[in-house]
Image (tube, rainbow, N blue to C red; front, top):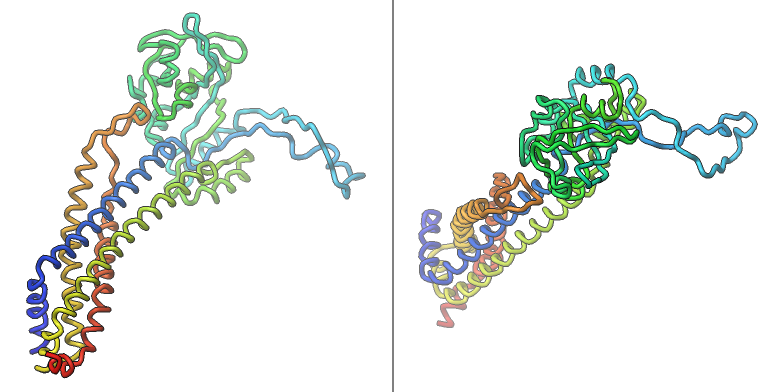
Length: 419
């Protein structure tokens, strides 16, 4: 019988101090709203910043690095085998830039169940010439279809189409910053000078914008065949193999495996972009810290309101105890009050948090540095709403438990005598 009365008594006490109850609920609502919005925005921003680079970065890159020979003649001499070798002014070895036996490597990678896809690439150091203007640059020869499927290449082509490189012979997509410096327009013919001094006319069929001005000032894209022609190489000349995996976390292990198997250099994405993962973790940690602080502050508000309610309702508590309610029942009444404030305030907070996130998500965000972004980024991951709900209930429970414990220890005889 007493159990059925507890919700009614809790409701009566809540409505008796309706103004203070609403203030406490508004505090919880505001905390949950800002918690959900802040986490959604910060993690959306993390995704934007990481994808800006990670979308264009292979999980594993196979290449031949320019480096000195690891085995010097003195280290192979039996006479000095037990000696320390101090060698200075070591020059790079006469290594080929292209990958050895690239056809067999491609076949092995494409048959590997862990590999999502492979995009071959050829890099050529060139000079751009258009009229009197001459600039240093890099032409990246790519397989357009694989580049689009694995690295979203077409998303960064702000003018023209990526497939034009495949369909139009001797064509080039310039970095937007480089095109602006050369005053190049769509359809213009620019002269590209290779490192051997040979000149090749290329038609401008598009402009590329990565969001990083230093890259867009130097890099441009052409088909594999065009770039091999600029370098005067055959069709099996490939300087890089860009690998995308189904599971990015396997990249460090597979990089070591491929380095040993194919006898070339292998760089994994974690080693190449460790700073991005660190930045994302720090920003997420700050978001959680601020959100949890807001919930704790709202918990103190509920604690103070319940404390004041106990002092004002001591006679009511005494009467309840005198009529047969135990200390545990009194504790349940005040915990019910706290959880009610947390539940309904949290529910409203989730709604307003989602609403505020939608408003931010529709605010225009236009910048030349991020051509693929049109509004502010928001992540609507349900786990943020689940975390907010759990923290809301836990915080309000703890805020109500201490006053409830105090109320349960009130001696009704002392209170009634005092009255």
